[in-house]
Image (cartoon, rainbow, N blue to C red; front, side):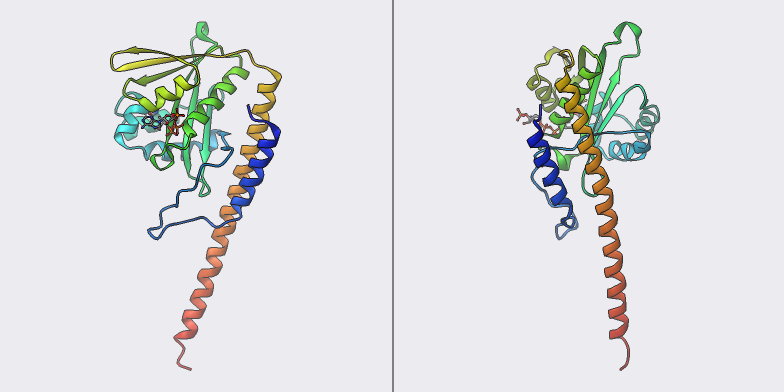
Length: 243
Ligand SMILES: CC(C)(COP(=O)(O)OP(=O)(O)OC[C@H]1O[C@@H](n2cnc3c(N)ncnc32)[C@H](O)[C@@H]1OP(=O)(O)O)[C@@H](O)C(=O)NCCC(=O)NCCS
């Protein structure tokens, strides 16, 4: 659990970072930055469906295979995203400064009445954002949300070759059962506490604020880019004048 000092420090750090222009290398690719102290993970609603689709469609075939357990084609991903139930389930996301969804997780609640206190976890992180702990943070966030929702067991279906996913589950204390090429991980969740409920509330507020700041920063930098383009155009036109 994060203490209030860490949360405040992280908010300040995120605020300062947003004042800097987006970093790009010579080839236009984003320059890697170290992972921030606190990763703002927000709960996503139906208005994020388009970005979720874009995120999943950008996954390479091998990642789609690992994420869905089969070689998901574009139309199958489209159907999956159309069918997301934002009322029943919980979708979490991490946005970068360009408002690209770089990581997302789906906490799906069991439909069967008899399995009411179970939820399945699925996650994907874009290759450029891997190895920074985002997968593990999304797992922790989903586990905390499930705990606060009265879920007693979170499970993950993964291919046995998926070392990273199984490591995330094991590190969190899940029991992993291997059955040939497939594995199931079960995480027994504790009872919710006042601490877990308040922490989730604060984390969600920080993430919502971070998102709003990113939207404003993006609008500001694109406005500035437009102004620069107009200025450059005026200078070019002036330099072409015969006198
Ligand atoms: C699995 C996935 C979500 C991991 O995301 P990530 O953000 O790179 O993971 P993290 O940085 O949080 O790393 C978690 C742990 O796995 C380890 N790890 C990461 N990549 C690894 C790899 N390729 N091989 C072995 N271990 C790896 C990390 O070292 C870390 O362990 P540690 O904390 O003990 O050091 C990401 O690789 C992915 O999107 N894969 C495709 C989709 C998928 O497999 N989804 C899971 C099935 S639902």
